[in-house]
Image (cartoon, rainbow, N blue to C red; front, side):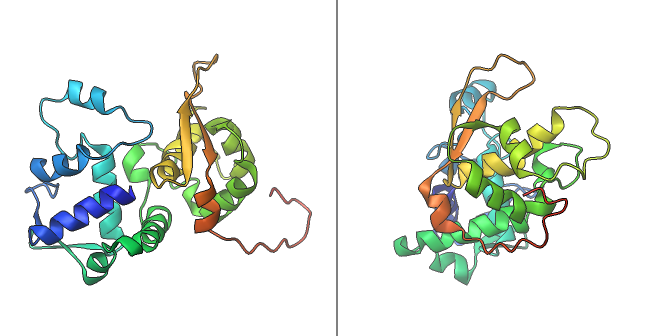
Length: 229
């Protein structure tokens, strides 16, 4: 995702701005510029190419996601139908600024973007509303390969889920709103895994050392009665 962000920012600087379509999306040529040069864990580029004669922004989920996050982070700004790199966005293009760019993207993904907008999951805002707890819990549990379901059980607060339309939706939210973005940010890794139960997702996740370098936690436990983490 950092690579995709740098490609978009550099292209916006080079072209003096990215002209958007009437619907507010990136043009196909600009989408392809990023799509062709990036890989996204959990998404097969060959399948996307086989299913689409042309690649629009909606077809290139990683490009769409990155563009929206860059806007939320204030690194791209839209004016009169054109996306332009802000002063901060231009500064973060320097090679030595890559760690700072990662930090900006990380904050924007989990605290400035509503991740429900991307997955069409009817569970509103969960578990994003307690993301700090989720990330801290992952920091102490996700050492080894684990399924999204196991990490969900260990790292989220479940008692806020009153009525869930389908039993697989919380696990789907954990994967699409937490684990997949973490993998795209490069602080988690994923691998395909054969499952025996059809309802389980076929990916395992674990953190990489960069996760601990990016985030630190100051945790104070207040009382033990009813504590879940």
